[in-house]
Amino acid sequence: MDTPALYATFWAVLPPLVAILLALITKEVYSSLFLGVLVGAVLYAGADFAGVVNHVVNDGLIASLSDGWNVGILIFLVVLGIIVALMNLSGGSKAFGGWALKRVRTRVAAEIATVLLGIVIFVDDYFNCLTVGSVMKPVTDNFRVSRAKLAYIIDATAAPVCIIAPVSSWAAAVSSFAGEGEGISLFIRCIPYNFYALFTLVMMFAIIFMRFDYATMANFEMNAVENGDLFTVQDVNAQAADAADEGSDKGIVLDLVFPVVVLVVSCVLGMVYTGGFFDGAGFVTAFSDSDASVGLSMGSLVALVIIIVYYTIRRTISFTECMSCVPEGMKAMASPILVLTLAWSLKAMTDSLGLADYVSGLVEGMSGFAVGIIPAGLFLIACVLAFASGTSWGTFGILIPLGLAITESHPELATPIIAACMAGAVYGDHCSPISDTTIMASAGANCNHVSHVSTQLPYATTVAVVSAISYVIAGYVSSPVVPLIVGVVLLIGTLFFLRGRAGSYRVSDSANTNQAAAE
Image (cartoon, rainbow, N blue to C red):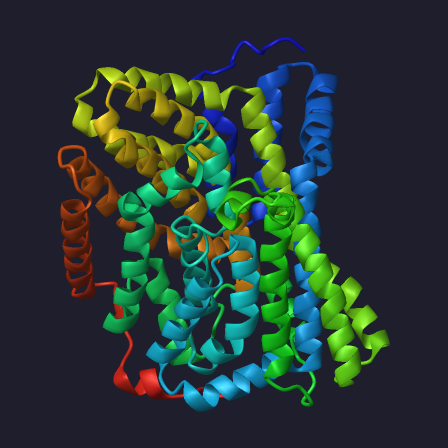
């Protein structure tokens, strides 16, 4: 079919906008995403019924599920689900929870431990989401931390941490979008200017140590602490996943630590293998040139074999029981995979309508603005694009080349401009309901997806507003120090202001130390 009449117009924004608004209003993600896909197909094919169906099925669903990158991610997710099922059945997660409960004595410590574990697992955001959730759920449940709060911590230590970690799949993605000769060095130069990621870490620690929550999160936390209801909004899939998490009493802490270490090492080796590390390339270069989808799939499959052999030798669970975890792990990932497939199909709809070209035109039109505003402007556009499309890496691909083109005439702003593109993309990835990382964070915490989105959005947006102000400052100063200091002071001041406002919820000292009976 020829290029549609609505190509690269404002109408290209409508499909993701429909999906997002319906998800927030109906609190039902499957139909919302599908209707977004359908709207995109109608805008593309018009009144041609056969064309609409063909665009949804062939250009959307089938194309998404036959894309090599997407298939690799799905394999990785399924294998992760199997490994998590193995750890739970072996009693490893349960044993670690018991070990941690003897040492983590306050609610603050439980939340900080979750943050630190999320920071340590910086290799990939998908791996981070599922591993941290599986390991820390027993600990946070014991202190009545709501699943929405757990999902926020998981999500906030996924993409925001990966985007400032030079050894990560995200560094490889950014490097691939940069110009020849830039690569990982550009990524490293951008770290101190990646205000959204840095301020998100400040935000997490501040919220935890100040022991308060605001906006929608306050209701979820109050219900968890005072009523023992960790979910507030019940979710059949989350409850089923929780029930599947019950494991053996024979497990030891090593039954969780060993699989996690093996998985991390295998995934890192798998990624650098695809980048040519074993053919003589340097470690950093191999990571820059790696194929994250293939590397994570290879690494996770190797790790799965090693983990099954380990459990069989340990006789914690039999080989037959290990094999029973294969369908269980796949079933646990069925809901996230369905959402991911629909989200990818929605992106295919926006691509066919020229959303990227529409945004590109907006960005190119910014060159006439005051030079110092360009980083802040690109940050805001990246926020909107990533939120609407649900993809940060796609946003990298659109805006980073454009940002590099702008810096040819303003080389002094090269680093803040590229960092702004990255930071805005991370905001969208962090809080968009159709983002794969947001979906994985919900799955990792066994939390209702819309609950996670609605509680996280005010927190992420607070950080984004402060980041935008910092980028305005960065456009007129030559160092990241001043905008960083101003941003941190402004963020902490904002939190103190919100803490004293009606609608916020402060956790009492007794609730902070009181251990609820683990379910």
